Each structure stands twice: as C-alpha cells, then as structure tokens.
Length: 121
Length: 112
Image 1 (cartoon, helix red, strand yellow):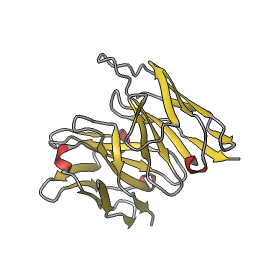
Image 2 (cartoon, one colour; image 1 turned 120 degrees about the horizontal axis):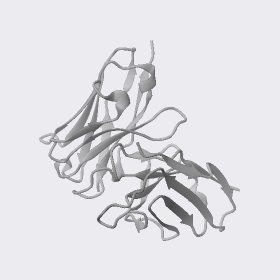
Image 3 (cartoon, each protein chain N blue to C red; image 1 turned 135 degrees about the vertical axis):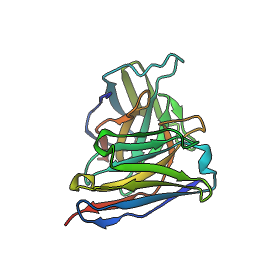
Image 4 (cartoon, chains in turn purple, orange; image 1 turned 30 degrees about the vertical axis):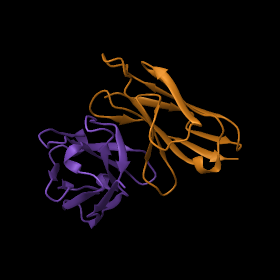
C-alpha cells in the first residue's frame, strides 16, 4: 500500500528553522514529483513547494521563496523541506503529496498525514 | 496567479439528496492537449485531503460513482448524486494548469 509518513514538525521561535521529512513506503518516491501544501489553523489549502521526480526542478510559493528549500534523498526514499527564518505566518499543518502519475506535476494523489509547525515566542 | 472561486462556501444536505458545488477560475484551465487541469479534493474532519477527481471528470481509484464533475475553460461543477453521512467535510477545487497551483476557498458540506 502506498503511504507517505511525515516527520519533523514542532514548536519553533520566530527566526528559527525546521526540517520536515516525507518518507515513502509502498512505492519509489524518485519516480514521482512531490508537492508541499500547508493549511493555517482554520483556513484553506495553500500550495508551498514542488520538486520534480528527478529533483532538477523546484518551485516555491512567493511567501516562502528564499527561505524554504525542498530536496529529495532517493537513497532514503524521502523528500525534505528545509524551512528557515520562520515567522508566525508560517504556522500551519504541512502536507506532502505525491504526483498522481509519474508524469504529473501538480495533481497529487496520496497525501501524508500532515505535520504541525507552530512558530511562536 | 489563477484565482479559484467556489460557491457556495457551505451547504447543508439531507442524506440521499443531491448536492452541487461550483468552481470558477480567473483564467481558462483548458490546455492545448484538450485537457482541463482541474481537480477536486475532499478533506474530511481531522484528515488529510483526498483526491476525488482529476482533469475535471476522472474519478480517482476507489472514489464512489456518486461523485461526478463537469465543465471546461473557466466554469466547473462537482455533483454528488446522493449525499451520505461519510461525505461530510470540505471540498476544494484546484487548478494545475500553471504554477502556482491554486485552490478554491473550500465548500463545507454538512448533513441535515
């Protein structure tokens, strides 16, 4: 069965850093693009970042550009999101999601369980 | 960015009755390939979003045939033929024709 298991969330002070991980099971993550989507408390879904299956293409939403970096470790079957210079506006549940097909870029089928990031003094 | 606008933002439906959600985009989602890059997700309470339909009307694996969708260009509609209690949650449309992918505000479905 296809699963994405997320880790790495938590409480961090403004200006701090966190690294989120998204580990795949039941499939080879290097075959699929992965997107990160976040959801602020009580709000809707907001796309954050994309990494291609080969890892050579990445995209970021304007609010996180220059602060977040997405990468993949195919040997560990994981995708990571490094988040730096965090602000209160980054407080959200972060989801990773795999592309629907190996050719899919943005349409995501399987989603991780989500990990809560709280930025607070 | 492509703006996605859903209506209504909430609806209350009696079990067994149909429901319909509209999604309009600020730009056409029709690609030169002939596909419209519009998908629908359902986020049940306390859960991650789940894919219902992609490229407008293609049901994802395991999705009930009570869910259907239609539309092209900038106007799209999700229909639930007979609402069941398990359909409770927030429905989102999402465009994937260009970066950044954008979501509608969400439509909250509750059962009467």
